[in-house]
Image (cartoon, rainbow, N blue to C red; front, side, top):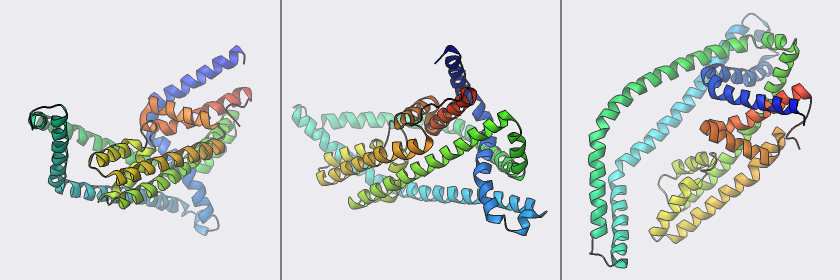
Length: 349
């Protein structure tokens, strides 16, 4: 690889990083609108291409209705999920005294064993824990009210900003879908426009493949974890199972963030059989992800599994949770830009 290719590769990497870091948060509503348009418009075209409405003047109103219906369905799903989680949280809050009593009993038993093992006065370690907990409660009460007041003002501003961005996203989606064919034709008339369309098409396939793969993994993990929690008679199995599947999608953390503490608590409570079930569940989740993710994503995206995992990890470290998706997309964009400049093939099988 000569010096020109090295310099071009470095410029592409820096450009993608700066675009994701500084430009993407500013134009995020339009990026979301563009993604929805690219994925949604071909579906609408296939659905209504033989209809007179699609060819007539009422096509505009059909597109308006379709865009509104799309976002209404998304909003209803989010509201349903939020309502379900709120109900489960309310149930946990109402039963909190019961769980608190069980935790205190568990801590007291552990402290008694520590007192016996270290030959301390009976109740010494538990008394120390009680004093620490009372101090934490006092500090929490004294600092909670000012923080609640400050966060309530910030939350009001965040809610207004989110609502405003949602409105902009819906409007941008409609106008992009309305002018989809015209925008595409103008872009295909120039060389750079064709390259951009090629990159967009690759990113579209990447997004569909990634969402399909992660969705399949999350469904399998959710089923396995929910069945495991039902098997050990966990009252919140229908919440913990999907939650473990969601957390398992995060790199570094994984399902162990929830399953390992559950297993440790069960062992301390003398429930070795239930702890063994949780351990097998963790191994099953690990096996599902290790087998499915690299092959299903890497083979269809056109990158080796090692590059796929590396890009996900680097994206997560640089941009947080959303970087888990931005990593492979950034690598693919860089690959396509490099190919457009030098007509070479990188990271392919």
